[in-house]
Length: 144
Image 1: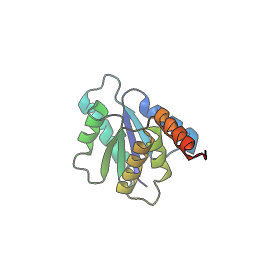
Image 2: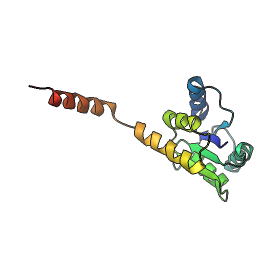
Image 3: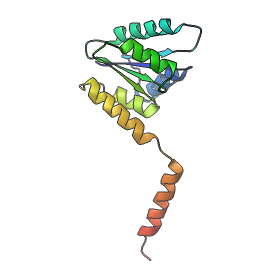
Image 4: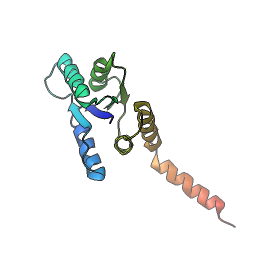
């Protein structure tokens, strides 16, 4: 099974996992790491490497971070450098995580990464504009 590691600022990673588990149940192959605190960058990178190793059962590990350019993303990229079956994605949100944990079985790491990215992109939207467009379409489609 593909492992999932969520690395974030603050408690975001832990709260995302806790919320996902309330929806879909406990997740064995998912771990989290917060970069908050007084640890040095190299210590955090080493923690990410250790977690990747503990999650990798031979099918790979998908590392999810909160934002590009931040400490979580940078240390995750450093830790994954040279690892052939580790992917690092940025911009994690709840729909991405739910997609990951619901589709881990029988998929490659590349397929799962693509599904997670697709779910993330599809769910970032302006609901106000969507509702206005639907209302306009509805008004236009009514017979006069």
